[in-house]
Amino acid sequence: MNEARHPSGTSATAPALSEQEKNVIIGGVLLSMLLAALDQTIVAPAMPTIGHALGHADYLPWVVTGYLLTATAMAPLYGKISDVHGRRTTIFAAIVIFLIGSLVSALAPNMLTLIVGRAVQGLGGGGLFALSQTVIGDLVPPRERARYAAWISGTWAVASIAGPLLGGTFAEHLHWSLIFWINIPLGIVALAIINNPLKKLPRVARTHSIDAAGATLLVAATSLLLLALNWGGSTYPWLSPEILGLLACSVVLWALFALRLRHAAEPLISLEVLADPVVRWGTIAIFLVQAANVGLSVYLPVYVQSAHGLTAGGSGMAMLGLLLGTVFGATTSGRAIPRFTHYKRIALVGGVLSLVCLAALAAVAGRSSLVVLELLTIGVGFGTGMTFPVTTVSVQNAVDQAHLGVATGLLTFLRSLGGALGVAALGAIALGNGLPLGGEGVQAAAAGAASAMPFAYIFIACALAMALSLVVYHLMPERPLRGRAESEIAAVVE
Image (cartoon, rainbow, N blue to C red; front, side):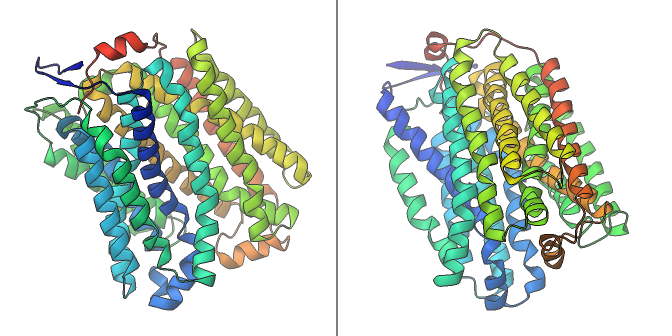
């Protein structure tokens, strides 16, 4: 019997989980994460078909933006909710909300209903991203946790590859609504897999509460910021009153959120967590790494169409080097962390490798062979992948079990926000250097009309983000990882 003890002193007992049961739970939550990750990539290839079927094609960007807004904004809120009400209850709620959104989207008779359904999907999807890593953190001590990072990276890689393939196939040969119908059986399977094992996690009595005002401010501030990043340079010029107004309102709401954190009786994000230098520098580092990683993954297909004359399908295959490199880098890092006392050096080595390869990409932009390009992108992915397990394990190791959900939610939030900001920043660089990014612009680039110079600037910007992440990793303290013995004594919050 394991005894779970809350900081307040209350305790509960529950049967010990076997290794098989732990692996079943981890498999179930990774399936949940796959659902949420797929829905970030599966829709894009089907958007022309959806626009033709439902009309109002000018609102199609909201099909993607609606999901992104709610998923990113909700991630840190789910972390706090799970710390208060337990992992099983919260992850069940997130899956059910996601499935409701999928059902609304699949049955949507018009574009407005589809956008609403996608926003509801995001409300659940944001929880699935954060809670999957949090549950793994509950089950596995930090010293052993790193090896599961390869599973997480593999899940993202599968979604990145399978999403566009499935979306295009469903829309072209079957029906676009299958993009959403497929979530229903997968979600039910995930619920069935994790239902009984999660019951064995100890339950602890609590008197905590959710800071509703703080949650509202956080969601509103994040939503306005992401709207500005999505619309800037495309729907409206960056210096237009609309974009400047959104940014100004977001800044005001962020300031109010900061005040709320200082004065709330029980803030949404614990000041104790925010004050920890490992959490502070670790979340900033993942923000910078993800800005470079996601930004590169968005503009690399455009580059290979321009510089190497590949088709849209061929450019997708060219992404395999980056994706597989990331998985192998995370696997290598996850296996190495328990063997190294100074495990932070793994992230530093990975960051340097990624930085060197990105600099090389910038140097040979427009005149490299496809083989050289693939080798360099594999290097970028491998180096980037090495940083992810170190960051996640360091942040989770820095907090006690009672704050694990908050810390993991904060990490997930800044990772998502970094990706969104990276895409927006690189888009501004591309537009500022004469690279059109609309559908006609991509076709022109594929025909060789676009100069390689905008891509060189994009690669340089990614390299600068990686260089800054190295500085931040250097500032992040390195603490001994807790092992199995300590983990079994610590409380598992449920």
